[in-house]
Amino acid sequence: MQTWLFRIDRFSSWSGKAISWLVLLSTVLISYDVLMRYLSKPLATGPFGEFIRSIWFTYNFSYEMSYYLYASLFMIGGAYALSRAQHVRGDIFYRKWSVKTQAKVDLFLYIFAFFPGILAMVSIGAQWTALSWAINEHAPTSAAAPPLYPLKTVIPIAALLLAIQGVAETIRCVQALRTGVWPPRLSDVEETETILAKQSEV
Image (tube, rainbow, N blue to C red; front, side, top):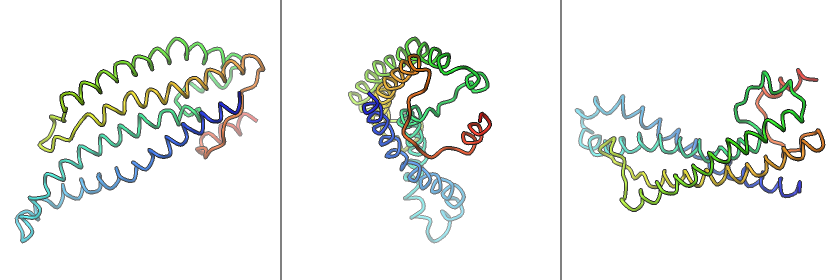
């Protein structure tokens, strides 16, 4: 069973690390956005005015795309964060509970909150995605009007990734209830805050 849990963890880790490259692309787009905001007006009246005006559309498009990339990064990265137990929780209470109490609370929340929400996200997200592709939906917020259907396609994909990782986490809860010890996870880089919190418990 532990082998399968690790396989799911690796898959979630792969998806999260693959999508993390969007950070670099987002940085480039945001930098371009800021640069154009400050340089477009003064340069538009100079010798490069015609060229600056010709790339104004690209500027608007990059502004929109930076939001879309961030949204995709946030959604797809959810399964990776879940596989590393890095989602926000009330640690001030949670860390003081016994392992079995933690497992009971987590299991309850997975069954009655997590999976119903994820199933709704898959179902509704798939409907939105199908409709968006059918009508060739584009963003109405700017003249660039980038397509929205690729972004909406991310919604059901992200939900499915979360559902797969959620199955692994549910199994971990059951194992913790039986043994009183949390099953091991794949090691990864930890934030300084997490390391200090663990050291304070020793």
